[in-house]
Amino acid sequence: MKMKLKKVLAAAMISLLATTALVGCGSDKKSADTGKKVQIEYWHVAAESFGGAIVKELVADFNKTHPNIEVVEKYNPDMYKGLTQNLQAAMASGKNPDVVQMGYSFLNYAAENFKYTDLNEAFKAAGDENFMKDNYLPNVLQLAQTEDGKQIGLPYSVSVPVLFYNPEIFEKAGLDPKNPPKTWEEVSKAAKQIKDKTGNMGFFMQEYADNWTQQALIESNGGQMLTKVDGKVKAGFDTPESAAAYQVVADMVKNGSGLHATNEEGFQAYLSGKLGMVCTTIGKRANFEKGAKFKVMASPFPAFGNKPTKIPAGGNFLMVFSKDAEKQKAAIEFIKYLESPEALAKWSTGTGYLPPRKGVADDPKGFKKLADENPNIKMALQEMTKVTKWASFPGANGLQAEQLLIDARDIILSGKMSAQDALHQTAEKINKLL
Image (cartoon, rainbow, N blue to C red; front, side):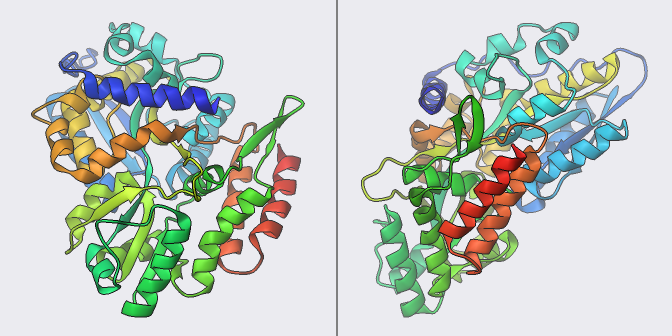
């Protein structure tokens, strides 16, 4: 499955870069023809420091050009886990949102636990049944398909974890900004050198309410997040390789060169020039480049020695949960706008996410020009050849399983328990849930 997805995403991005003509012209700006305004709700995870302003800009533009549709956007904290929890509560009370940014790690959970709108049927009902086929490569569409081929959503944002660093701090610490750490051993040494020679913190790894970067750590060291035993999904991270991967970050925190904090604290430390390195999504690129007073530089996710890095594809896809036909039609119209070349270029430029639609990455007047000029974007595109599937805990207890592993991360980083013991206990609890 991992190799299949790796080939899927690598081929997808290569094809996106190779495409020389824009396909289609985006939303045709038709509105729901009911004679009255249809209001729909759009749920997202874009905080103000993570694309929130772009969401508001896109929604305002859509509302202005579609007088018979009004989109109301709603930010959901705690990323995709928080959004999914809120979605559970909303659907239980019968108050479904209409369009939702669903994280790739919750694809299986959403498919198994929520009543969603089949996008093939929805586009057909909206009179545009070939929209997905005409504008997306089959392997890109697979990112929002279940294993049995159901198209439960449309890919919207794609990201990879990278290592951002401050070249000025590197120079003060006697490190070469042109030769950033390539392995976790080098990261650890650089973090300690930064702390010892500058007094600044050396390293911070994002601490969102998910296990995205932790999966990259585990699987890059030869471990697995999930495995199958007798046809049943089990926790796969109770291994020496996984424990060693977690312990690398925990040891940096223990010796004072690593930071264990909220994302807001960690990211602000980086932007204010008090942190040397931060490992997080390329989706933070625009926010960092805009907010920092130094030149923001980024390098690939570090490796464990000579082992190949395996990084899960991050980001989200768009799902529809509208109950009635008019709202479904309006939701599809809004999705077509969000996925138009113009809107995608704004979204990708304003965040750092990589566009999924054919032609956008190769638009000489838009994203391609930016990618050619920005080495951080160019590097992220090249990293797509290393991606694996973002693990998704199945079943009704998937959210609880995800939270248990998040809690284990905090226990390990706070030094309350070794990585080996914490992961062992967590695996036992998760296996009982699954």
